[in-house]
Image (cartoon, rainbow, N blue to C red; front, side, top):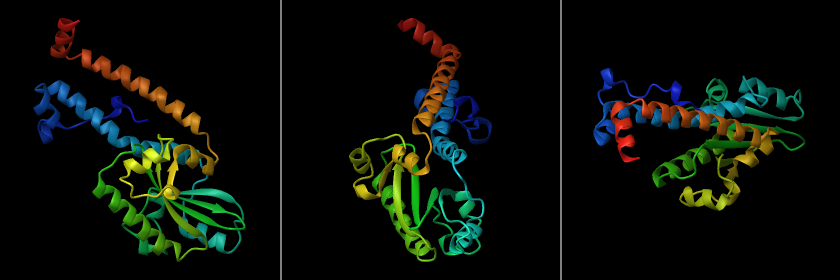
Length: 228
């Protein structure tokens, strides 16, 4: 999980006071809240990095697919990140609509799972519909060019209940296109609980740091002490 201690938040000198400061009326507290928000935003990328570090990753998507087509790679589960996909020279028809990750399952029947990875599980209707449309478009364009049966999925890593995910996705995604984090880890043969425990430790560090910074703001500390 991303750390608040590493987040810079809004640059007050360059960008002026944050919306948090305008709501709260305290510059130091507003800046701290903007750092929390920056941490929340970066959590998705951090989750992707944690998963990628535990998988067999593809660095050259063009070479990988060529090797599978030539039967030089016959078995295994491989992950391709959005960053690696952007380097393609053969599959440029998908430029601009890259999903978060692709999982290639190489076996007697090759499968490619196109994944949009989420740290949360509730989003606005317009965003969800746009992401689904992009996933479908990607599968149609990319899937027709590779020797893999290809389908798309939305994965809400921290939610185990697919019905809740479906509701949070405004019912745009059917259950067969929804993955939980646990299911994603099973496909990749990585330890879901180990990732969850690591993130919980980071969560505790964030809590301790936030409270420390909060109490370091004189006006906030005075208000808290007055109300205890």
